[in-house]
Image (cartoon, rainbow, N blue to C red; front, side):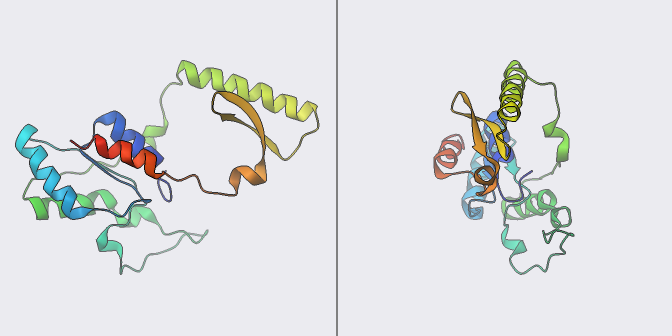
Length: 173
């Protein structure tokens, strides 16, 4: 959902035409964002900022955060949207509101691609069981369904990389 990886916020920002997006993988450029939002406001009288819940805002640097049973900070208590909205309003003078979409963005009807992908990985998973290849999972690599060891699949966090971030920044116009 955005604790360590900002994929949902990145794709939401790109698809939704956000004027700025904040991700946990990238150091927030607050001054640049405020300056940009003022320009955006002058042009269209509104601005849209998308923030991942795991983004490290400057206000959080010295904050002692409560942990859950797994040792993760309780992000709900950070109130990223409200904190960010207050900061933007303070720095720009533009009335700002926040909306937390929570788990809503994970809903919706599956697309044709989703349905076909589910069928393809399901068939591959059944084949893996039939072949006795346990400890493996079916996954999409490029446009092919492949088998990969579970250990390999979960060994590294898949975070937003520089190439995707550069693409998003092109759209902050």
